[in-house]
Image (tube, rainbow, N blue to C red; front, side):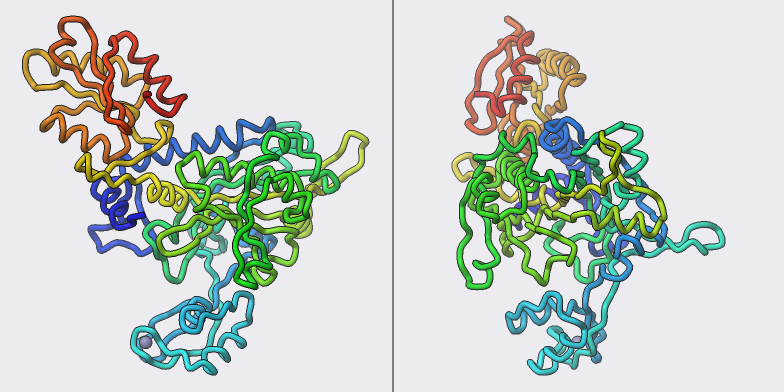
Length: 495
Ligand SMILES: [Zn+2]
């Protein structure tokens, strides 16, 4: 794993751009460049195929980024979406108190009160890591960005810290528009905002980031009746249990079916999503050994939750969550009913009403993409350059199209091929530099196929297709190119 290399490739080739860079940037914000947008869109499309289209009734919506104060009163974010912070009295730097303590004395302090944290800092004699100054009392800091709507500025509102609340507040509308019956899901993909105290690790901890969330609503007594569970019951999961975390043990490998039978996971619906995640992240190129589900410790778990498991990936700086899975029961709908006064129950066939329970898998897009990039980087001394082993469905471009030389009508012929393919696939045309340099540039951004037009093309209308992973080539007729590229997309490789 070479995070320096991935960061340098993706910045140089314009996947990511530090936000407002010409003015010195804004910490915790990144922009997407052209290749980044193409890759992100494909990543999302793959996710849709995996998680939305594979289930009959998950409905995708897109809701407002700004929501009024009332939403976050009901959701609990105003009160509890907080981090403990402490300020150095000398240099005025601000730190997350819990991280500071964990780093300084290796003590896990999640869930402790500001007073308790202040006492630990004093007792352990923890000083400012920058100037060794004295640290002030710990206080709570709300991570939501506040704003005021309207010319009078009197409507207190917030940039959403998660996409989930937009789903709950639209629940009734979606239900009546789709005539959905339990179980069903509502999904949302989009930007969320958190005023993180210390953004870090490139695009892992950002202040503006993209999420893909599903709220899957189920009859409270039917969470073990998941009809899709059979498809994934033999998928192997790696689970780090609470016991292992407390005693410093290892992860266990267990099938989804066994995990439910042994009560490691709360129910089959929950286990279904975990198994799908395991398949999805391995499809992206992250190996089984670098993936694990960590059972959140009691102090990390909200009181209403009946099961929280983070899917974590092993990064160069340690394990980090990329998906949060939570069995949130009826907490959200119940609270929105209470605060809004609206009826958010579901009427069953027999006329009775029920507040459904919800299973929530919540995916972070940027950290998932970064994790994937770290694991698909191939440092290739033999070839002489590095390349990305991206899945054809995810790579920004499916193919590059090159004339062997820029004379003798080869560029014109190559343009013809390019124009034929560009309406069907993401392809690019390149005639700058030697053919070897063009292969290198295409490989570096993970382009699965290079198509070269040479002198033989002018005689028999054939071209060479070069496979990124093996560098092997095959001659095919121009009339067969569309089909061959379709096969590359579906099968994941040329050969
Ligand atoms: Zn200081």
